[in-house]
Image (cartoon, rainbow over all chains, first blue to last red; front, side):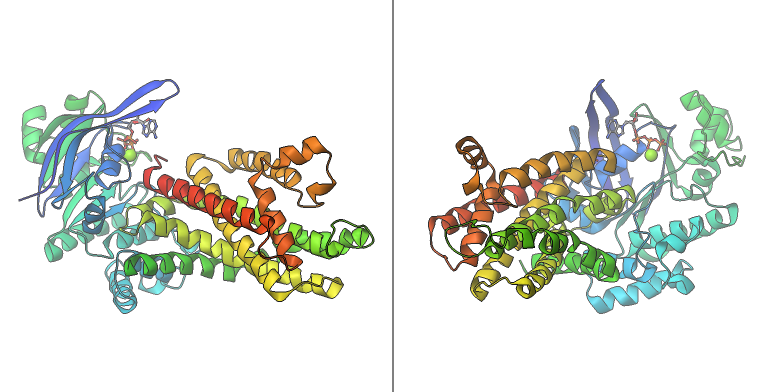
Length: 260
Length: 251
Ligand SMILES: Nc1ncnc2c1ncn2[C@@H]1O[C@H](COP(=O)(O)OP(=O)(O)OP(=O)(O)O)[C@@H](O)[C@H]1O
Ligand SMILES: [Mg+2]
Protein backbone atom coordinates (compact mmCIF):
# COMPACT_ATOMS: atom_id res chain seq x y z
CA UNK A 1 0.00 0.00 0.00
CA UNK A 2 1.31 3.45 -0.88
CA UNK A 3 1.96 5.69 2.09
CA UNK A 4 3.10 8.61 0.00
CA UNK A 5 1.86 9.27 -3.47
CA UNK A 6 2.37 12.43 -5.46
CA UNK A 7 1.19 13.47 -8.88
CA UNK A 8 2.86 16.37 -10.64
CA UNK A 9 3.86 17.93 -7.32
CA UNK A 10 5.47 21.27 -8.12
CA UNK A 11 6.66 24.42 -6.47
CA UNK A 12 7.67 27.67 -8.07
CA UNK A 13 9.08 30.50 -5.97
CA UNK A 14 8.41 34.04 -7.10
CA UNK A 15 11.55 36.06 -6.54
CA UNK A 16 12.69 39.53 -7.45
CA UNK A 17 14.66 38.05 -10.31
CA UNK A 18 11.72 36.13 -11.68
CA UNK A 19 10.26 32.71 -10.94
CA UNK A 20 12.42 29.87 -9.63
CA UNK A 21 11.07 26.44 -10.55
CA UNK A 22 12.44 24.55 -7.57
CA UNK A 23 10.32 21.43 -8.10
CA UNK A 24 8.95 20.74 -11.53
CA UNK A 25 6.41 17.96 -11.25
CA UNK A 26 7.27 14.95 -9.12
CA UNK A 27 5.38 11.67 -9.53
CA UNK A 28 6.26 9.34 -6.75
CA UNK A 29 4.83 6.34 -4.92
CA UNK A 30 6.33 5.11 -1.67
CA UNK A 31 5.04 1.84 -0.21
CA UNK A 32 4.54 1.47 3.55
CA UNK A 33 7.67 0.50 5.44
CA UNK A 34 10.11 1.48 2.70
CA UNK A 35 13.31 3.39 3.33
CA UNK A 36 13.53 5.73 0.38
CA UNK A 37 16.73 7.59 -0.45
CA UNK A 38 16.06 10.91 -2.15
CA UNK A 39 19.24 12.01 -3.90
CA UNK A 40 20.30 14.91 -6.03
CA UNK A 41 22.90 17.64 -6.29
CA UNK A 42 22.68 20.90 -4.31
CA UNK A 43 19.63 22.89 -5.29
CA UNK A 44 17.93 19.90 -6.95
CA UNK A 45 14.73 20.49 -4.99
CA UNK A 46 15.00 17.86 -2.26
CA UNK A 47 14.32 20.11 0.71
CA UNK A 48 11.56 21.90 -1.18
CA UNK A 49 9.86 18.55 -1.87
CA UNK A 50 10.14 17.55 1.78
CA UNK A 51 8.75 20.88 2.92
CA UNK A 52 5.74 20.39 0.69
CA UNK A 53 5.18 16.83 1.89
CA UNK A 54 5.29 18.00 5.50
CA UNK A 55 2.80 20.87 4.88
CA UNK A 56 5.35 23.63 5.51
CA UNK A 57 5.10 24.89 1.97
CA UNK A 58 2.04 24.99 -0.25
CA UNK A 59 2.54 23.30 -3.63
CA UNK A 60 1.99 25.53 -6.65
CA UNK A 61 1.00 22.53 -8.73
CA UNK A 62 -0.02 18.89 -8.51
CA UNK A 63 -1.30 16.92 -5.55
CA UNK A 64 -0.14 14.44 -2.95
CA UNK A 65 -1.41 12.24 -0.18
CA UNK A 66 0.64 11.26 2.84
CA UNK A 67 -0.56 8.42 5.08
CA UNK A 68 -3.95 8.67 3.42
CA UNK A 69 -4.38 12.40 4.00
CA UNK A 70 -4.50 14.96 1.23
CA UNK A 71 -1.72 17.51 1.58
CA UNK A 72 -3.89 20.53 0.90
CA UNK A 73 -7.30 19.44 2.18
CA UNK A 74 -6.18 17.74 5.38
CA UNK A 75 -2.85 19.19 6.50
CA UNK A 76 -3.57 18.28 10.11
CA UNK A 77 -4.02 14.64 9.24
CA UNK A 78 -0.68 14.74 7.44
CA UNK A 79 1.00 16.43 10.40
CA UNK A 80 -0.28 13.86 12.87
CA UNK A 81 1.08 11.00 10.79
CA UNK A 82 4.50 12.43 9.96
CA UNK A 83 7.72 13.40 11.67
CA UNK A 84 10.14 15.84 10.08
CA UNK A 85 13.79 16.38 10.87
CA UNK A 86 14.89 19.50 9.03
CA UNK A 87 18.26 19.90 7.35
CA UNK A 88 19.39 22.26 10.11
CA UNK A 89 17.46 20.82 13.05
CA UNK A 90 14.94 22.60 15.22
CA UNK A 91 15.76 22.77 18.90
CA UNK A 92 16.17 25.87 21.02
CA UNK A 93 19.74 26.07 22.37
CA UNK A 94 18.57 27.65 25.64
CA UNK A 95 16.12 24.86 26.49
CA UNK A 96 17.03 21.53 28.10
CA UNK A 97 16.98 18.29 26.13
CA UNK A 98 14.32 16.85 28.41
CA UNK A 99 12.05 19.86 28.05
CA UNK A 100 12.38 19.88 24.26
CA UNK A 101 11.50 16.19 24.06
CA UNK A 102 8.52 16.35 26.39
CA UNK A 103 7.16 19.55 24.84
CA UNK A 104 7.45 17.95 21.43
CA UNK A 105 5.44 14.93 22.58
CA UNK A 106 2.75 17.19 24.00
CA UNK A 107 2.60 19.25 20.81
CA UNK A 108 1.73 15.97 19.10
CA UNK A 109 -1.05 15.32 21.58
CA UNK A 110 0.57 12.94 24.08
CA UNK A 111 -0.43 13.37 27.70
CA UNK A 112 2.10 14.66 30.19
CA UNK A 113 2.93 11.17 31.52
CA UNK A 114 3.07 9.66 28.05
CA UNK A 115 5.44 12.32 26.83
CA UNK A 116 7.68 11.98 29.88
CA UNK A 117 7.87 8.22 29.36
CA UNK A 118 8.46 8.67 25.62
CA UNK A 119 11.28 11.14 26.27
CA UNK A 120 13.06 8.62 28.50
CA UNK A 121 12.53 5.83 26.02
CA UNK A 122 13.83 7.82 23.05
CA UNK A 123 16.75 9.11 25.07
CA UNK A 124 17.61 5.54 25.88
CA UNK A 125 17.30 4.40 22.30
CA UNK A 126 19.26 7.32 20.83
CA UNK A 127 21.94 7.39 23.47
CA UNK A 128 20.91 10.67 25.04
CA UNK A 129 20.09 9.48 28.54
CA UNK A 130 22.99 11.16 30.31
CA UNK A 131 22.27 14.38 28.46
CA UNK A 132 18.61 14.92 29.32
CA UNK A 133 19.25 17.77 31.72
CA UNK A 134 21.73 19.63 29.53
CA UNK A 135 20.82 22.67 27.52
CA UNK A 136 20.72 21.88 23.82
CA UNK A 137 23.50 24.43 23.25
CA UNK A 138 25.82 22.19 25.26
CA UNK A 139 25.50 19.18 22.93
CA UNK A 140 28.07 18.14 20.34
CA UNK A 141 27.05 18.11 16.68
CA UNK A 142 26.39 14.40 16.70
CA UNK A 143 24.41 14.54 19.94
CA UNK A 144 22.38 17.42 18.50
CA UNK A 145 21.56 15.39 15.43
CA UNK A 146 20.46 12.40 17.51
CA UNK A 147 18.24 14.73 19.50
CA UNK A 148 16.76 16.13 16.28
CA UNK A 149 15.88 12.61 15.23
CA UNK A 150 14.41 11.76 18.62
CA UNK A 151 12.25 14.89 18.25
CA UNK A 152 10.96 13.56 14.94
CA UNK A 153 10.02 10.24 16.52
CA UNK A 154 8.21 11.35 19.69
CA UNK A 155 4.76 10.52 18.34
CA UNK A 156 5.80 7.32 16.48
CA UNK A 157 4.85 8.72 13.11
CA UNK A 158 3.88 6.46 10.23
CA UNK A 159 6.23 8.43 7.98
CA UNK A 160 9.53 9.98 8.99
CA UNK A 161 11.15 12.62 6.78
CA UNK A 162 14.87 13.07 7.36
CA UNK A 163 16.63 15.89 5.52
CA UNK A 164 20.35 15.07 5.43
CA UNK A 165 20.24 13.37 8.83
CA UNK A 166 23.94 12.47 8.98
CA UNK A 167 25.59 15.55 7.55
CA UNK A 168 28.41 16.56 9.86
CA UNK A 169 28.56 13.27 11.77
CA UNK A 170 31.69 11.16 12.16
CA UNK A 171 31.66 7.73 10.47
CA UNK A 172 30.86 5.91 13.72
CA UNK A 173 27.89 8.13 14.52
CA UNK A 174 26.64 7.78 10.96
CA UNK A 175 26.69 4.01 11.19
CA UNK A 176 24.87 4.24 14.54
CA UNK A 177 22.25 6.40 12.97
CA UNK A 178 21.71 3.96 10.13
CA UNK A 179 21.18 1.29 12.77
CA UNK A 180 18.64 3.47 14.51
CA UNK A 181 16.74 4.09 11.31
CA UNK A 182 16.68 0.37 10.51
CA UNK A 183 15.49 -0.47 14.02
CA UNK A 184 12.74 2.14 13.93
CA UNK A 185 11.49 0.70 10.67
CA UNK A 186 11.74 -2.87 11.93
CA UNK A 187 9.90 -2.14 15.15
CA UNK A 188 7.20 0.24 14.06
CA UNK A 189 7.04 -0.29 10.33
CA UNK A 190 7.84 3.40 9.87
CA UNK A 191 8.25 4.58 6.30
CA UNK A 192 11.45 6.62 6.05
CA UNK A 193 11.98 9.26 3.40
CA UNK A 194 15.52 10.58 3.62
CA UNK A 195 17.78 12.82 1.62
CA UNK A 196 21.52 12.47 1.66
CA UNK A 197 24.63 13.44 -0.22
CA UNK A 198 26.51 10.38 1.03
CA UNK A 199 26.24 7.71 -1.61
CA UNK A 200 27.54 5.00 0.71
CA UNK A 201 24.72 5.88 3.04
CA UNK A 202 22.13 5.70 0.31
CA UNK A 203 23.59 2.39 -0.83
CA UNK A 204 23.66 0.86 2.64
CA UNK A 205 20.40 2.15 4.02
CA UNK A 206 17.84 2.72 1.30
CA UNK A 207 15.63 0.07 -0.27
CA UNK A 208 15.09 2.30 -3.25
CA UNK A 209 16.61 5.48 -4.58
CA UNK A 210 15.03 8.41 -6.36
CA UNK A 211 17.43 10.83 -8.01
CA UNK A 212 16.26 14.36 -8.72
CA UNK A 213 17.98 17.08 -10.67
CA UNK A 214 16.70 20.56 -11.35
CA UNK A 215 13.36 19.74 -9.82
CA UNK A 216 12.66 16.58 -11.82
CA UNK A 217 13.08 12.88 -11.17
CA UNK A 218 15.88 11.69 -13.43
CA UNK A 219 16.27 8.10 -12.22
CA UNK A 220 14.79 5.69 -9.75
CA UNK A 221 15.25 2.10 -8.68
CA UNK A 222 17.06 -0.06 -6.14
CA UNK A 223 20.73 0.77 -5.61
CA UNK A 224 21.68 -2.39 -7.49
CA UNK A 225 19.38 -1.58 -10.39
CA UNK A 226 20.75 1.97 -10.73
CA UNK A 227 24.33 0.70 -10.63
CA UNK A 228 23.61 -1.91 -13.27
CA UNK A 229 21.79 0.47 -15.51
CA UNK A 230 24.05 3.52 -15.27
CA UNK A 231 27.45 2.09 -14.34
CA UNK A 232 27.28 -1.28 -16.05
CA UNK A 233 27.23 -3.72 -13.11
CA UNK A 234 25.54 -4.24 -9.73
CA UNK A 235 29.01 -4.19 -8.18
CA UNK A 236 29.94 -0.84 -9.72
CA UNK A 237 30.02 2.18 -7.47
CA UNK A 238 26.92 4.22 -6.90
CA UNK A 239 29.21 7.16 -7.34
CA UNK A 240 29.75 6.32 -11.02
CA UNK A 241 26.05 5.76 -11.49
CA UNK A 242 25.30 9.14 -9.90
CA UNK A 243 27.84 10.82 -12.17
CA UNK A 244 26.29 9.22 -15.21
CA UNK A 245 22.80 10.30 -14.13
CA UNK A 246 23.41 13.91 -13.18
CA UNK A 247 26.66 14.65 -14.95
CA UNK A 248 28.03 15.82 -11.61
CA UNK A 249 29.66 14.20 -8.62
CA UNK A 250 27.68 14.08 -5.39
CA UNK A 251 29.46 16.52 -3.14
CA UNK A 252 28.86 16.16 0.55
CA UNK A 253 28.92 19.63 2.14
CA UNK A 254 31.90 18.78 4.30
CA UNK A 255 33.55 16.76 1.55
CA UNK A 256 33.70 13.53 3.54
CA UNK A 257 35.12 10.64 1.57
CA UNK A 258 32.52 8.82 -0.46
CA UNK A 259 32.78 5.11 0.13
CA UNK A 260 32.97 3.03 -3.01
CA UNK B 1 -12.02 23.22 21.29
CA UNK B 2 -10.51 21.63 24.39
CA UNK B 3 -7.41 20.65 22.43
CA UNK B 4 -7.23 24.25 21.23
CA UNK B 5 -7.23 25.47 24.82
CA UNK B 6 -4.68 22.90 25.96
CA UNK B 7 -2.48 23.58 22.92
CA UNK B 8 -2.52 27.28 23.72
CA UNK B 9 -1.71 26.54 27.35
CA UNK B 10 1.15 24.30 26.25
CA UNK B 11 2.70 26.95 24.01
CA UNK B 12 2.09 29.60 26.70
CA UNK B 13 3.79 27.38 29.29
CA UNK B 14 6.87 26.88 27.15
CA UNK B 15 7.41 30.62 26.71
CA UNK B 16 6.36 31.56 30.23
CA UNK B 17 9.05 29.22 31.58
CA UNK B 18 11.61 30.88 29.33
CA UNK B 19 10.59 34.30 30.63
CA UNK B 20 10.65 33.19 34.25
CA UNK B 21 14.19 31.91 33.78
CA UNK B 22 15.33 35.44 32.93
CA UNK B 23 14.55 37.74 35.82
CA UNK B 24 16.49 40.60 34.21
CA UNK B 25 14.12 40.54 31.24
CA UNK B 26 11.16 40.81 33.60
CA UNK B 27 12.53 43.77 35.54
CA UNK B 28 14.39 45.65 32.81
CA UNK B 29 11.26 45.88 30.72
CA UNK B 30 9.76 48.13 33.39
CA UNK B 31 12.84 50.32 33.58
CA UNK B 32 11.88 52.90 30.97
CA UNK B 33 8.48 53.79 32.47
CA UNK B 34 9.98 53.81 35.97
CA UNK B 35 12.59 56.34 34.85
CA UNK B 36 9.85 58.49 33.36
CA UNK B 37 7.95 58.28 36.66
CA UNK B 38 10.95 59.31 38.70
CA UNK B 39 12.51 62.00 36.54
CA UNK B 40 9.67 63.25 34.36
CA UNK B 41 6.57 62.84 36.51
CA UNK B 42 7.67 65.42 39.12
CA UNK B 43 7.95 68.08 36.40
CA UNK B 44 4.23 67.85 35.73
CA UNK B 45 2.75 67.89 39.22
CA UNK B 46 1.81 71.56 39.09
CA UNK B 47 0.75 71.64 35.45
CA UNK B 48 -2.99 71.57 34.71
CA UNK B 49 -3.05 68.82 32.05
CA UNK B 50 -6.70 67.85 32.05
CA UNK B 51 -10.01 69.22 33.29
CA UNK B 52 -10.41 66.32 35.74
CA UNK B 53 -7.80 64.69 37.91
CA UNK B 54 -4.18 65.40 38.66
CA UNK B 55 -1.10 65.10 36.48
CA UNK B 56 -0.35 61.52 37.64
CA UNK B 57 -3.74 60.41 36.35
CA UNK B 58 -2.73 61.72 32.94
CA UNK B 59 0.88 60.57 32.95
CA UNK B 60 0.54 57.02 34.32
CA UNK B 61 -1.97 55.78 31.72
CA UNK B 62 0.38 57.08 29.02
CA UNK B 63 3.33 55.30 30.60
CA UNK B 64 1.40 52.03 30.84
CA UNK B 65 0.52 52.08 27.16
CA UNK B 66 4.03 53.16 26.23
CA UNK B 67 5.28 50.14 28.13
CA UNK B 68 2.85 47.96 26.19
CA UNK B 69 3.76 49.59 22.89
CA UNK B 70 7.50 49.03 23.16
CA UNK B 71 7.30 45.72 24.96
CA UNK B 72 4.88 44.18 22.49
CA UNK B 73 6.27 45.66 19.29
CA UNK B 74 9.66 44.07 19.86
CA UNK B 75 8.33 40.66 20.92
CA UNK B 76 8.85 39.41 17.36
CA UNK B 77 12.58 39.52 18.07
CA UNK B 78 12.40 36.29 20.02
CA UNK B 79 10.54 34.62 17.17
CA UNK B 80 13.16 35.79 14.71
CA UNK B 81 15.82 34.03 16.74
CA UNK B 82 13.69 30.91 17.07
CA UNK B 83 13.16 30.95 13.34
CA UNK B 84 16.90 30.93 12.79
CA UNK B 85 17.18 27.84 14.99
CA UNK B 86 14.43 26.06 13.05
CA UNK B 87 12.14 26.00 16.09
CA UNK B 88 9.28 27.70 14.27
CA UNK B 89 9.23 25.19 11.41
CA UNK B 90 9.47 22.34 13.86
CA UNK B 91 6.35 23.63 15.60
CA UNK B 92 4.57 24.33 12.34
CA UNK B 93 4.81 20.66 11.33
CA UNK B 94 3.04 19.57 14.50
CA UNK B 95 -0.78 19.30 14.43
CA UNK B 96 -1.11 22.18 16.91
CA UNK B 97 -3.48 24.86 15.64
CA UNK B 98 -1.79 27.87 14.08
CA UNK B 99 -3.86 30.15 16.29
CA UNK B 100 -2.54 28.33 19.39
CA UNK B 101 1.05 28.78 18.19
CA UNK B 102 0.41 32.51 18.03
CA UNK B 103 -1.87 32.93 21.06
CA UNK B 104 0.37 30.96 23.42
CA UNK B 105 3.15 33.38 22.61
CA UNK B 106 1.16 36.62 22.77
CA UNK B 107 -0.55 35.64 26.03
CA UNK B 108 2.88 35.19 27.59
CA UNK B 109 3.74 38.70 26.37
CA UNK B 110 0.48 40.07 27.78
CA UNK B 111 1.08 38.43 31.16
CA UNK B 112 4.60 39.83 31.32
CA UNK B 113 3.53 43.35 30.40
CA UNK B 114 0.61 43.41 32.82
CA UNK B 115 3.01 42.35 35.56
CA UNK B 116 5.38 45.17 34.60
CA UNK B 117 2.43 47.59 34.43
CA UNK B 118 1.50 46.61 37.99
CA UNK B 119 5.05 47.43 39.12
CA UNK B 120 4.80 50.83 37.48
CA UNK B 121 1.45 51.53 39.16
CA UNK B 122 2.82 50.53 42.56
CA UNK B 123 5.70 52.97 42.24
CA UNK B 124 3.34 55.62 40.89
CA UNK B 125 1.08 55.20 43.93
CA UNK B 126 4.09 55.81 46.13
CA UNK B 127 4.88 58.95 44.16
CA UNK B 128 1.42 60.41 44.53
CA UNK B 129 -0.93 58.77 42.02
CA UNK B 130 -4.52 58.50 43.24
CA UNK B 131 -6.97 56.62 41.04
CA UNK B 132 -9.92 54.25 41.55
CA UNK B 133 -9.00 50.55 41.71
CA UNK B 134 -11.51 49.66 38.98
CA UNK B 135 -9.95 52.29 36.72
CA UNK B 136 -6.50 50.85 37.28
CA UNK B 137 -7.74 47.33 36.53
CA UNK B 138 -9.37 48.57 33.33
CA UNK B 139 -6.01 50.12 32.47
CA UNK B 140 -4.37 46.69 32.82
CA UNK B 141 -7.07 45.27 30.57
CA UNK B 142 -6.15 47.75 27.86
CA UNK B 143 -2.44 47.01 28.30
CA UNK B 144 -3.20 43.30 27.86
CA UNK B 145 -5.40 43.81 24.81
CA UNK B 146 -2.93 46.15 23.18
CA UNK B 147 -0.11 43.72 23.84
CA UNK B 148 -2.03 40.88 22.23
CA UNK B 149 -2.66 43.02 19.12
CA UNK B 150 0.77 44.54 18.72
CA UNK B 151 2.64 41.37 19.61
CA UNK B 152 0.59 39.48 16.99
CA UNK B 153 1.60 42.05 14.40
CA UNK B 154 5.17 41.92 15.60
CA UNK B 155 5.25 38.11 15.20
CA UNK B 156 3.63 38.48 11.79
CA UNK B 157 6.41 40.87 10.77
CA UNK B 158 9.05 38.54 12.20
CA UNK B 159 7.64 35.71 10.06
CA UNK B 160 8.11 37.89 6.99
CA UNK B 161 11.58 39.37 7.47
CA UNK B 162 14.82 37.42 7.62
CA UNK B 163 17.10 39.31 10.01
CA UNK B 164 17.02 41.50 13.13
CA UNK B 165 18.71 44.20 11.05
CA UNK B 166 15.59 44.62 8.94
CA UNK B 167 13.17 43.97 11.78
CA UNK B 168 14.32 46.62 14.27
CA UNK B 169 14.25 49.68 11.96
CA UNK B 170 10.78 48.72 10.69
CA UNK B 171 9.45 48.48 14.24
CA UNK B 172 10.99 51.81 15.19
CA UNK B 173 9.56 53.45 12.10
CA UNK B 174 6.09 52.53 13.38
CA UNK B 175 6.64 52.96 17.11
CA UNK B 176 8.00 56.48 17.26
CA UNK B 177 5.17 58.11 15.27
CA UNK B 178 2.70 55.96 17.21
CA UNK B 179 4.11 57.23 20.49
CA UNK B 180 4.19 60.89 19.45
CA UNK B 181 0.82 60.97 17.68
CA UNK B 182 -1.15 59.22 20.39
CA UNK B 183 -0.37 61.72 23.12
CA UNK B 184 1.31 59.16 25.35
CA UNK B 185 3.47 61.69 27.17
CA UNK B 186 1.16 64.72 27.15
CA UNK B 187 -2.53 64.71 26.22
CA UNK B 188 -3.38 65.72 22.67
CA UNK B 189 -5.91 68.20 24.01
CA UNK B 190 -2.90 70.51 24.40
CA UNK B 191 -2.04 70.16 20.69
CA UNK B 192 -2.79 72.71 17.95
CA UNK B 193 -5.83 71.81 15.83
CA UNK B 194 -3.97 70.14 12.94
CA UNK B 195 -1.91 67.92 15.22
CA UNK B 196 -4.95 66.94 17.25
CA UNK B 197 -6.78 66.08 14.01
CA UNK B 198 -3.83 64.05 12.75
CA UNK B 199 -3.65 62.14 15.99
CA UNK B 200 -7.21 60.93 15.51
CA UNK B 201 -5.85 58.77 12.68
CA UNK B 202 -3.63 56.94 15.15
CA UNK B 203 -5.59 54.05 16.70
CA UNK B 204 -3.44 54.04 19.83
CA UNK B 205 -4.73 57.49 20.72
CA UNK B 206 -8.19 56.07 21.50
CA UNK B 207 -6.69 53.57 23.91
CA UNK B 208 -4.75 56.27 25.73
CA UNK B 209 -7.83 58.45 26.05
CA UNK B 210 -9.86 55.51 27.36
CA UNK B 211 -7.32 54.59 30.03
CA UNK B 212 -7.05 58.25 31.12
CA UNK B 213 -10.84 58.31 31.44
CA UNK B 214 -10.73 55.09 33.49
CA UNK B 215 -8.15 56.61 35.83
CA UNK B 216 -10.54 59.45 36.70
CA UNK B 217 -13.48 57.07 37.15
CA UNK B 218 -15.25 57.87 33.87
CA UNK B 219 -16.28 54.40 32.68
CA UNK B 220 -19.08 55.04 30.19
CA UNK B 221 -18.16 58.22 28.38
CA UNK B 222 -17.32 58.47 24.67
CA UNK B 223 -13.59 58.07 25.37
CA UNK B 224 -14.18 54.62 26.87
CA UNK B 225 -16.57 53.57 24.13
CA UNK B 226 -14.22 54.55 21.32
CA UNK B 227 -11.35 52.95 23.20
CA UNK B 228 -13.16 49.62 23.49
CA UNK B 229 -14.29 49.68 19.85
CA UNK B 230 -10.85 50.49 18.47
CA UNK B 231 -9.23 47.86 20.71
CA UNK B 232 -11.69 45.20 19.55
CA UNK B 233 -11.07 46.07 15.89
CA UNK B 234 -7.31 46.01 16.42
CA UNK B 235 -7.50 42.64 18.15
CA UNK B 236 -9.48 40.97 15.39
CA UNK B 237 -7.35 42.41 12.59
CA UNK B 238 -3.99 41.68 14.17
CA UNK B 239 -4.68 38.17 15.49
CA UNK B 240 -6.09 37.21 12.07
CA UNK B 241 -3.01 38.57 10.34
CA UNK B 242 -0.67 36.83 12.76
CA UNK B 243 -2.39 33.46 12.46
CA UNK B 244 -2.47 33.75 8.69
CA UNK B 245 1.31 34.17 8.60
CA UNK B 246 1.93 31.20 10.89
CA UNK B 247 -0.12 29.19 8.41
CA UNK B 248 1.42 30.46 5.19
CA UNK B 249 4.94 31.69 5.92
CA UNK B 250 7.20 30.54 3.15
CA UNK B 251 10.20 31.42 5.27
N1 LIG C 1 12.17 30.41 -0.38
C1 LIG C 1 12.79 30.31 -1.58
N2 LIG C 1 12.74 31.33 -2.46
C2 LIG C 1 13.34 31.23 -3.67
N3 LIG C 1 14.01 30.16 -4.09
C3 LIG C 1 14.10 29.10 -3.26
C4 LIG C 1 13.49 29.12 -1.97
N4 LIG C 1 13.74 27.93 -1.36
C5 LIG C 1 14.46 27.22 -2.24
N5 LIG C 1 14.69 27.92 -3.38
C6 LIG C 1 15.43 27.45 -4.57
O1 LIG C 1 14.87 26.22 -4.99
C7 LIG C 1 15.87 25.35 -5.46
C8 LIG C 1 15.79 24.03 -4.72
O2 LIG C 1 16.21 24.23 -3.37
P1 LIG C 1 16.23 23.06 -2.30
O3 LIG C 1 16.57 23.67 -1.00
O4 LIG C 1 14.97 22.30 -2.40
O5 LIG C 1 17.44 22.16 -2.83
P2 LIG C 1 18.09 20.87 -2.16
O6 LIG C 1 17.95 19.78 -3.18
O7 LIG C 1 17.53 20.62 -0.83
O8 LIG C 1 19.61 21.31 -2.09
P3 LIG C 1 20.73 20.98 -0.96
O9 LIG C 1 21.28 19.65 -1.33
O10 LIG C 1 21.73 22.05 -1.20
O11 LIG C 1 20.10 21.02 0.37
C9 LIG C 1 17.20 26.08 -5.27
O12 LIG C 1 17.53 26.66 -6.51
C10 LIG C 1 16.87 27.13 -4.25
O13 LIG C 1 17.69 28.26 -4.42
MG1 LIG D 1 18.29 20.62 1.09
